[in-house]
Every structure is written in structure tokens, then in C-alpha cells.
Amino acid sequence: MILVRTPSHKETESLLGYVVRVSETNGYESPWNILNRLGIAQGAMSSAGFPTRTFAPILGRAPEALDDIAYSLPASGDRGFKILSHSLGSGLRYRPLRLKHPAACPDCISEKGFAEAFFDLRIAVACPIHGKELLFRCDACRNPLSMFRPGLLVCQCGASLAESSRRPASEQTVALMAVLKAKLEGARMTDPAPAGLPAQALLTMPLRVLLQHLPKFAAFNRKGVHEDSPEIADGIAQALANWPRGFHEFLNDLSRTEQTVVFRRRYGAFLDQFFSSQEARKEFNWLHEEFLQFGLTYANDSIVDARFAPAKTTERRFISLTELSKRTGLDRRTLESWNRKGILPLQRVGSGSSTRYIADAREIRLPRNLQKTDLLGERAAAAYLQIPVSTLSRLKGTGHYEVKEGLHKSCRN
Ligand SMILES: [Zn+2]
Ligand SMILES: [Zn+2]
Image 1 (spheres, rainbow, N blue to C red):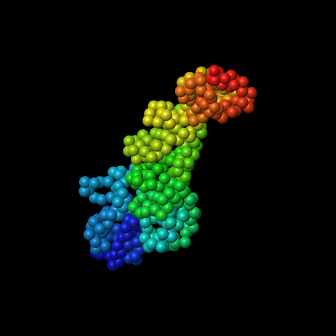
Image 2: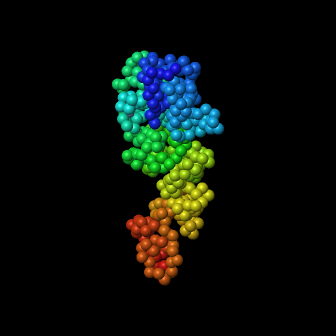
Image 3: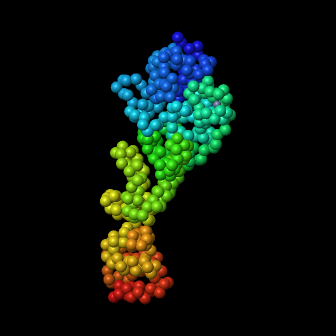
């Protein structure tokens, strides 16, 4: 048997959406009528194993005709799952697909006449074209959308889905959706960095890696939110928007309650989540680089130990008092007392016996082959004293001028 109407599928069409469209265009109440005739089990409509090669012949097409939009292909050496041309790996435990209860952008369906594969991704919660959250439930009966509905824009209860009410999505979520949709469809983006997202870095990564690891951001900044909530995508987008500022804020929030000043330990949970697997470490190298950069130059409440960033030891901006003492040759107690007097700015972390001081190496000038006979300008004098110029100026204003003057003179002699 061949159906009366046999529309061909679109390049970016959802496989299961296509099955609903074929059923609707042939006037059936539900795709079940066709599946039943082909001996395809009902469960296939909520499974990545939908047998496209059993379905295609009823359209008068070769069994392989739907391979490009299938989620899996029968044993041919490759038992993996996929969406369009992207591999999803050999297992779906990370649930990349939203199969049982689909989501839709009724506006897209109205305009294009088909449901896009993008909305089969569980991470897809908003439409980047219409800027609204997707439709998950029917306004009339409040039931989740079903694959066994009579039409793409008709609920099982008979209500039209075309005019459903949907909330606008946040700008950052819409931007993330635009990047992911472009990735899935291999399309060019009109805005190369919407909402300041690191779109180019994201686009070069395998889709599977993005789907598997991006939600981990939300495990930190959207704690306790249900894994199917649109909030998850918003958490991801927030961590990556206005790159890298958004990421730095994400990291700052993350360590607010941490007591340790050791950078590596402060962000232990984050490191474990994102960089413990070899693959993630490799694919997210751009994220790791920025993470290190944040530790080296922005995180003034922690210290990146030399072993953690061996290639970048000289770039470390925040150092312990012990290291400052070693670098300057000045006694720890001197440095501490200068800090108490307000001459040497140090960041104080923790309290009581666990108080630690962190110095900003950018503010400390180290001596450079100074000869005692040099006539010292203010900058050089500060260098000789191993204190910042600003500190030297402050010395003059706070009555420590004499001390400085003495040393200054001794330099001249
Ligand atoms: Zn749309
Ligand atoms: Zn309904």
C-alpha cells in the first residue's frame, strides 16, 4: 500500500514531526493509523529507534529515503544515534532528544509548514526566530503535546495550537538557541556573537559534546531546577553571555561561600564537572583557557598555585604573602605591618587563624639592577623599596615620609 499524499521531507525536518505531517495530510486522526498498518509499535513514536526503513516504502520511496532525518540507522556497523548529520553517540543516557512529549513553535510551523528537528533537542526551549518559549502544553486541555495528535497545529483534544500563548524568552536564551540551531543545521549566523556569546568557539565543537556538557553550567547557577525546565538553557546562556564577563561573574558567584584561597580547590567542583573527562578537556579548551586567565588575572580572592598553571607562572597576578616575601626579599612581618599601616594593599581572605593575605603582583614593582649611585626618581625609588609608586605617594601623605626619605637618601649615598 502507498499513501495518497506523499510529501517529501525537508532537510531540517523533525522525523517524528514528519510522520505527524504525513498522517495529517492524508486525513488521519492520528499517526497511529499508519503505524498500525505497517506493524510499527506505538512506542516507536517516542523512541530514537523509529524504523524509518519500514516507514519510507508507504510513501513510495526507497527504504533509505529518510535516513538523513532518522535518529538511528539499522545495524550497518554503526549502531549509534544521530540527529540530521550529527552523531549523538552510542547511548542516549544524557537524553539529548525530547521524544515522548514534543515541543513546538507554532509560529514556525505556520510559516514553514513543518516541524523542525531543532525542537527535538531537549536543550531547545525557545525559538530563536520568534523569541518565545516553545509550546509544551495545550492551552485548552493543559496536557503535554502528543506525537499522536491529528495535526502539527492540532492537539489531541481537538483544540488548535496555532494561537497558543507563550512567554517571551530572555535575550540570552534566544541567543543561545540561535547558536545551537545554526550548529545543528550547519547554517551561517547573521549575528556572529548574539548576546556576546562565544559563538565561534561553540560552533566548532561537536553537537553531542555541547548537548552533553553545556547543561552542567545550570547545575551550578540554576541549582535544584528541574532538568527539563527552560531555566536550564537560561543558566547556560547566562554563564556564556557577554563573554568572558558573564563567565567571570559565574565563577565569582560559584566561589562566594568557599573558604580556601587555593584557586584549584575553590573551583574543584567546576573542574570536576567540566574538565575531568579527556574529551571535555580537549573540546572545552577555550573554556579552560579563560578559566585559567580568570584565576591568573581577575580572581583576587584566590591563588593559582604554580603547579596548576606551570606554563603561566609568570602571569600569576595574585600571590601569597610567602611568595611576595620570596620575590621581594622582604620579611613577611614587614609586609604584614605595612599592610596594617595601609601602605601595602593586601586582600584579606578568611578570618581568625585561617586569615590569609593575597598580594596583587601587578601593584608590586620589583627592583631592576639598581645601582646605589643612581639618582632615584619616584618610580625607581618605589622599585628599590619594592613598593608601588602609589604606595610611595601615600607614604608622603600619611606621615611615613620620614621613613621613605631616609631610605631614599641612603640610596643616593
Ligand atoms: Zn518560531
Ligand atoms: Zn488539548
